[in-house]
Image (tube, rainbow, N blue to C red; front, top):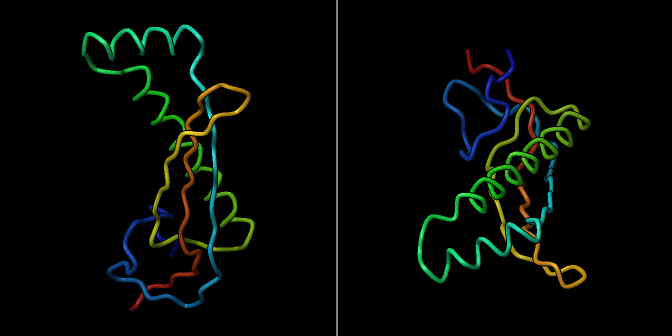
Length: 114
C-alpha cells in the first residue's frame, strides 16, 4: 500500500515503516507579480490592508514547488516524501522582485508495519 498523502512534514508516519531511504528531493518555483500587482500592493502597504494578490501568488508558487518535488521523488521510485520543509525568499532578477519557494524532503519507500 502506498502512503496516500505521498508527502508529509512528519519524519515518521504511523502505521508505516521506512523500507528504504532514497535521499533528498526538492522542487523550486519562482514567480513575479505583474507591474500592476506590484503597484497595487505598494499602495495597499501604505494605507494598510490584506495583500490578497501576494498571498495568492505565494500559495501558487508553494503548490508548484511541491508538485516539482513530488515529480522528483517519483522519478527516483519513491512512494513518499517525509520531513517536508519549505524555504521562501525574494530574489531580484533584472530589477524585478520575484518570490522563490523551494520544497524539500527525504524521498523514501514506505511499507505497512503490519
